[in-house]
Amino acid sequence: MRRLTLALFAIALAFSPTFAAAQPGNFILREPSEVMPDLQFTDDAGQTRTLTDFHGKVILLNLWATWCYPCRKEMPSLDRLQASLGGPDFEVVPLSIDRGGVEAVKKFYAENGIQHLSIHIDQTGKAVFTLAAPGLPTTFIVDREGREIGRFIGPAEWDTPEIVAFLKSVIARDAPVSPAVQQKE
Image 1 (tube, helix red, strand yellow):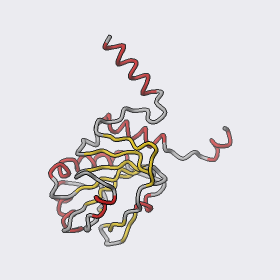
Image 2 (cartoon, one colour):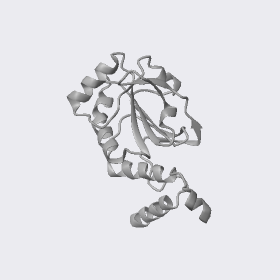
Image 3 (cartoon, helix red, strand yellow):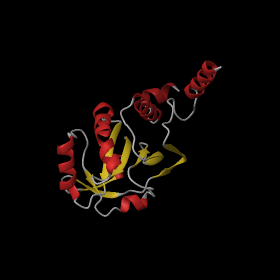
Image 4 (cartoon, one colour):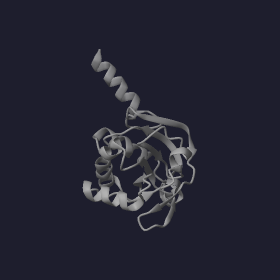
């Protein structure tokens, strides 16, 4: 009976209209998806950035701080995720709310061997309130058009096979259709 239940679950997931891979446990799906506020923050060079700068990519926006123990613990797995999936279709965007600014994050990255993540800072902490994040870390999956697909509450091991498969299914589902494919339809 257990095998039948697992087989039916696998078949249901395969034909799910939303995602081909199972949603991780702490994922809260946003249906219908909502446009994310265009947050303002700075990068490591002090340049103003917004979420619109990532338009065209699926992004994993992670609100965190160097003083947050669960955040500190998950950062290496976010770094490995960026190393494996990051590119023209996907990017991990860690948004630190540290009041210590860029220097606090640079120090943390150096001490923990973080090499693949960019630095983004919101020293005001407004992002937490604007996005109604219940605490840190909170992570948002944002589609190519800037809409929130869903959010993870709390820490995660971001490079597990299950989460990577889930994110790959989100990226594939949200892939732009090339003109050649549109002409065939």
